[in-house]
Amino acid sequence: MNEDQSLQELEASIQKIIDADTDNFQELAELADLNLQTDFVGADLHGTNLNGLNFVKANLHQAYLSGAYLTRAYLTRAYLSGAKLYGAYLSGAYLSGADLIGAYLIGAYLSGAYLSGAYLIGADLIGAYLIGAYLSKADLSDAQVGNARFTSNSPGMTEELKQDLIARGAIFDGGSRDRVFAPTSR
Amino acid sequence: MQQVNDSTEPIYRKQQDNKCPDFLYLDLEFKDTPTDRLEQTELPQKKDLYLTLNFNEEWLELPGGKVKYGLRGFELRLNLTNCIIPEFYLCLNDTMKLVTEREVETQRGVEKSSKVGGSLSREKADLSAKQDYKNTEKRTEKFQKTVYHVSTKGDELSPAWVFEADKDESVLKGTLAEQKLATVTITDISHQLTATFEVVSKNIYIGDAEGIWPDNISRNKLAIIERKIINWLLKSKLQPYVSQVELSYE
Image (cartoon, rainbow over all chains, first blue to last red; front, side, top):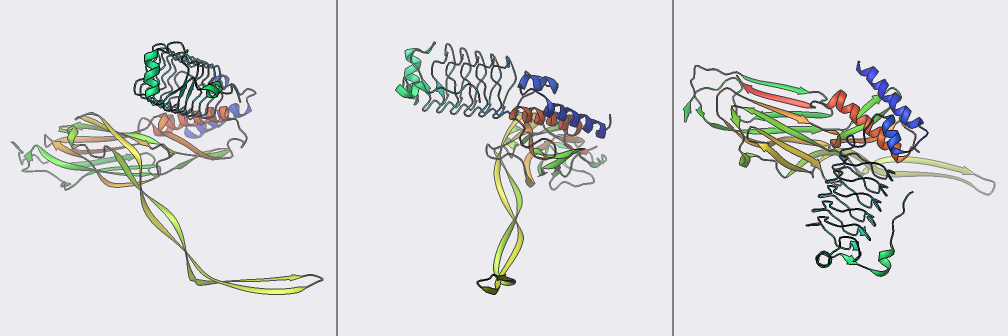
């Protein structure tokens, strides 16, 4: 196939996406012959609506997901190392065992997120909302948690972890602040 | 130390393959190296290796419109034969400074421009003339930006430099001129060095577009389209490498 033909194919594929009746990201990806698990490394997905989608074990290394809607998304064991998730909506997201090493989660909404066994080493969680997040065996070592909001009764929240997080600037059971919840969709 | 037999007369060769020279131009040069042959030289010998890069954004023309793309990062990999680069001889391992040009407009009180205006109404007739004296001069200024983080990896036979644009910088633009990259230790008179400039999907930035998608397209559709374009660019233009330079003495 020469370059002209190949460009025409690309343009036809773009037109198919523009004309699609759906705005569901997974369906659009299928139309474009893209795989959610493998084709979005470092992708610019800021502000996209990915609520409830299946990204189990997906490679989203260094993806730009700031402001993305990932409420109740399935991100179990996803590779999100270095991902930019500033202000992302991750409430109730399934992130067990996810690799979030060095991820930027500043101001992210993680209330009720399942972070059991997640690797948050060196992650930037400044100002993030982790109210009611499941934190059993989550590794928060070297994570920046200044002004991040936690609750004492979160599953996996030990007294030792709580005191450690407070010493690093986290806010616990902060009255009205605890009732800040993220929107679930746009 | 090994003495080089002067009956061997290796020929210096340089092969350059810049696939998209306006988009990315790569050059490498040994400094103070004779270009025809080496002889009577003691080995091992050390030579400084200098790198030149020039980055620009480029338009991809599609039948129905066009889209701009550029680079946010890349990897420069060297493969060495009969020469090595010990880790402590790697340079350019912190930040990269690019020189970019911009047009600067300055005004001076020299130029004369005249405006004559008139108005006519039932109440009042008025004619006015106004002259402004000003001079507008455009000139190009060069300035240096340090916006790219550089890290190194690999080993002494295949070192690599990984360049990434800083958070606030979306695209690589400008020139890196004759920057010392490393000091190479040459262990045999016949030696070879191949530099390969490689990019992966996360390194490609999609910018402005004209006539390809409607202004009110959803974020989801746009993200998928951008990914599709990036995959096409990689497959059709930018892989397995964007540029390659081979320096050899044979």
